[in-house]
Image (cartoon, rainbow, N blue to C red):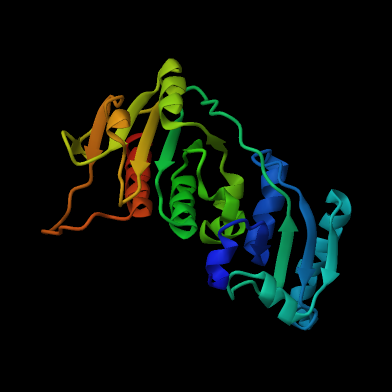
Length: 255
């Protein structure tokens, strides 16, 4: 197994200042209960005077929140890291707990089902968060086991976004009981997303590009939407791209 693939199994190593800030901000906002255990930094990288304010802030934050900030050789950081964009800085963190969905009145949520890798999952979360969604529902088998990879791919959004876990059919039941419209992204019996009524409250379900959304789940939808192409193209968009476009169409319609 390649190093990168092995990190997908269980990864609570968060790389770079953006990911670490997201951990700290997520705890402050109450979107995550994940605790930072320690922060490791490369003293050679942080010998630069321009890096000193960042290091001092980390040390003061560590004193306040109860985590250690310690020097670590660059070779050890490289071994712990999945990628190479860590900037000489890592955080080792604990697990995060995920509860059942608890939708707010008049909100917008997305349910992501069957995304194939943690990078695409992270890319989707980044766009959904930026578009102003209230939260994302994940299936019990999801990519947050590779939390460090997802955080880096999402530019920290995965720790700032309220996330919940439910079987898709159970999620539909919860949201429908709260008066939400259920929308599935699919090609069959669907209307163009740009012509559909995507007013809140809304739960949008996007499936992976290989398996899509199960038929049982499609039959529970109030509406199916598709994304039109500007030319003949037989392939499907990635789930991350589809989720991004639909999330921004929801933003546009609900401005």
